[in-house]
Amino acid sequence: MNTAAVAGTPGGPRTEHAWEVLSTVLDPEVPALSVRDLGIVRDVIEHEDRLEIVLTPTYSGCPATEVIERDVLDAVERAGLGPAYVTLRRAPAWTTDWISAEGRRKLFEYGISPPGPVAADGAVPIRIFGRKSDPTIVCPRCGSKNTERLSAFGSTACKSLYRCVSCREPFEHFKAI
Image (cartoon, rainbow, N blue to C red; front, side, top):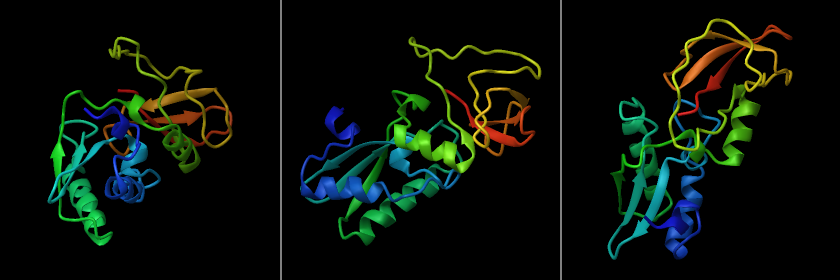
């Protein structure tokens, strides 16, 4: 994989422009983030006759994958960079560690608590717990760490529902995967 491209460093003028365009394509489930902020754009490869956009879906059953593919291709075409095609790369699997710092900031401002880092070995332990305070989950409304989980699932499978005990407001937390 082209590690420079993954970090968003352009390979040439057309590729650089494509990365800029991809920064404007919003995720359909979390429209506060671009697909680039979310870290699902893994590479932009310039071939002689077309661009290849490499995407890694947030999870294999993500219902928004086809919409994202279409939005990416439409944006590249509108920018005059086409023709282009999308390649889905499912390995290595997407992780919330790929969300950019800017993306984490945008999630928080949008009212979704961003995920913390994934364990160093990539494993995310399964924990069963009731409504207890989790000091790592910060309320995006008042900044309190006195929060409790209401449900393992929020509006999408990648989010869970929390409530701030301090300000009593509910909010979603983007799960670390």
